[in-house]
Length: 240
Image (cartoon, rainbow, N blue to C red; front, side):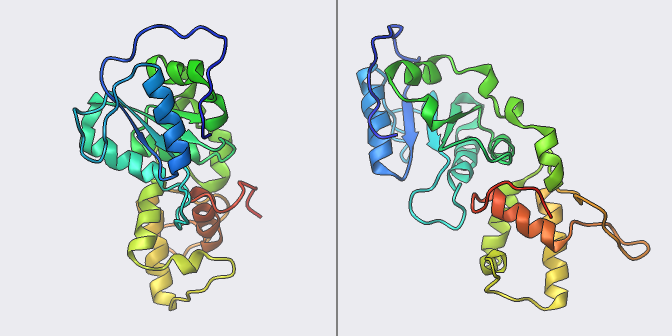
């Protein structure tokens, strides 16, 4: 969404009590939201400087615009903002769509209050509603569907962004390319598989065998698929 257009629908008078900030590395999309907020009379905050005051509401784009490996990098930005701002600000995440079942889990991990598809915030009235009175149905916990999470071994308490950050920190993103462009020794593969399963708090999605007295962990196939979907690089098709 670039320009936020007005409609004939009446917009309730009065801005939210406190500044509103927009975080989006796509300047066209960000400008559309900022112009709409300004037209609605909201005070705007610079989230980078947290000025003129801590924002009451932060709207964050989930979808990275400039070729990040984690294509949903904005969810990690939302988590960083929650850590900086504490519980005083409402964080609303906008995503291109909500087809990815892991999006709500990442939003929960980030501490986001609400998660909207961008198509629902298309005019001044809908933008005003998101800022003033977002729908309880758009809370991430309400959107996390256990039936769609189960094939990935994921629960609403999983920490998918933390796992993606681990992959980047260890410089093994190529391991999750298709086909892989990085190859590890068996020992390093076992170590990374254990670290990812623990960090992301995921369980095996199907029958897995292990030696006696060893923990049963997700297979590499499951983890590679999970990472691809969690970072927005693959459709959420069932594991096969």
